[in-house]
Every structure is written in C-alpha cells, then in structure tokens.
Length: 295
Ligand SMILES: Cc1ncc(COP(=O)(O)O)c(C=O)c1O
Image (cartoon, rainbow, N blue to C red; front, side, top):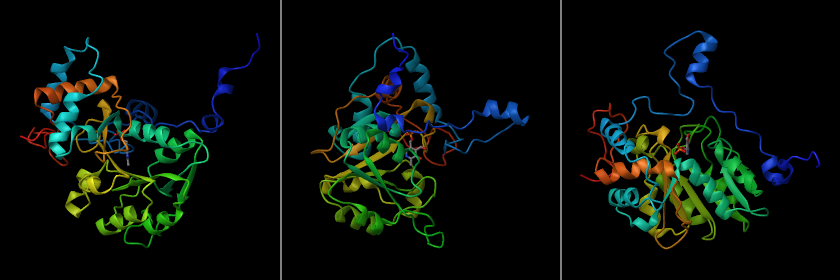
C-alpha cells in the first residue's frame, strides 16, 4: 500500500484554502487571561438572546427530536412567505445564511467563472468563491474619508463585472465596515449588471438598519430575476446557535434545489406552533418582538 493521503485528490482550489481560524470560545479566553464577564463581539451575535417565545418553542420541540426533519421545511417557509408577502417557492433554507453562500457558489461558479466582491467584504465570500476554483475579483473599497468609509464602491464593482461574472456579493449593511448603500445607488447597480449575473444581496443585518432607510431587497425581487436576497435568524433574532438562514429569489428562477438541514427542524416546529417568534432588534427579550408569522 502506498503512503499517499486521500487529501491529494481534493481539488487544487480546495487544497489552496487557508483553514479558517475561528474565534476563541469565551471559556478558553477566560482561562487564558484569568478574567470574567467577557462580551463576545467578534461574530456579531445578539447578546440580548432569543425571545422567550422562541425558547419555549424550542423546549417543546425537543420532545420530537426522534423524528427526521421535514426535508422541505414546509412550515418555516410557509411562515416566512406570510411574513414577507412572497410565494413559498421563492424560499430556500440553509444552515445559517453562510450555508446559502456556499450553495450559491457551488451552484453558479466553476473554474473559468468569476465572482465580484468588495475589498472589505464579509470574510466568507472570497472563501466560497475560491473553493469552487472560480476567480474572485476583489474591488477596492471606498476611501476612509468617504461618508461610508471602506464601504462598497458600487460603480467600480459594476465596472469589474464582465461576461464571465456569475455572482456579485453585496452585504447591505456590510460586515465588517458597518456601511450601507443608498437605495438609488443600489438600484442603479442592479440595473447596470447583466441579467446573466446573479446579484447576491446579503441582508444579515437589515433589521438593524431599517431606521436609516436601508433598502429591503425583497421588495425588488419581482422586478429583478437576477437578484437573490439572504436573511438570517442569527443576528437580530438572537438565534445564531440554531443556524437558520434563508434566501428569497425571484419567483420564476434562480432557486436551487431545496435542501434544508436537520438543524432547521426545530425552527420548523416553532413556526408550526405559531410561535415562530424571536425578539426584534433591540427588543429586550420580552416576547413582544417581531414574530415570524404575522399576528
Ligand atoms: C454579512 C454576513 N452575512 C452572513 C453571515 C452568516 O450568518 P449566519 O450563517 O449565522 O446566518 C454573517 C455572519 O457573521 C455576516 O456577517
């Protein structure tokens, strides 16, 4: 038997990936530095935590943990469809919206294709692109003197799109810069991009930016078949540990086969019970926050 390791059969693109180094768990840091009461900010979790209604629904759902999950995520999608006023068929569920970024890259990219993202984008975009063997076009961000320092330069990003570009990633608001795009600039960008390029509008932090007039990309889906919007329960809803995210696509196309992961089952059952709920941004976990299902 030869001593070769199966790793050699991984694609060159995957072998070229630098392993992701996750942030240290709080317990490890406390032990290391001998301090207590650490507030973890690195992953933008919501320290307020989930709504008591969501916690109650999760407790109740535990009793059904012996059943395989509903592979279609029917109940959660139905609740989301009602909440957003969009057809059920527009939704794809993922293990966090991170999972959907991976799925989109796998579905649309291959060696020879390109994807465009901004210099200070969410760190996962370049990784999911690289894993497919496609080429990432990293566009310099706006200057630090700009009104949106280090934010996306949408005009430059539009110029970086060519006939090989399959995906463009825009987080609105963006992590890690905390910047956001004006509605008109964003609309012009989407209209400037060829209809064969899918614009991935990552709205993980949308709920926090409504007060500053941040655009709800879901409103634009009917008019733009090449737009897909990502949302998550991880941030404003304080449910990062559940790993539930979703994409909303134009009803007519752009959707990938639906394959919700088992972890979604708990949320699906919460939705079925009509709790569906989670505290909205800034809601101190009183249970009066936004519900997934409209009341
Ligand atoms: C911009 C952005 N998009 C997506 C995600 C992924 O979130 P999740 O996989 O928890 O839904 C994050 C998480 O930090 C993020 O900052």
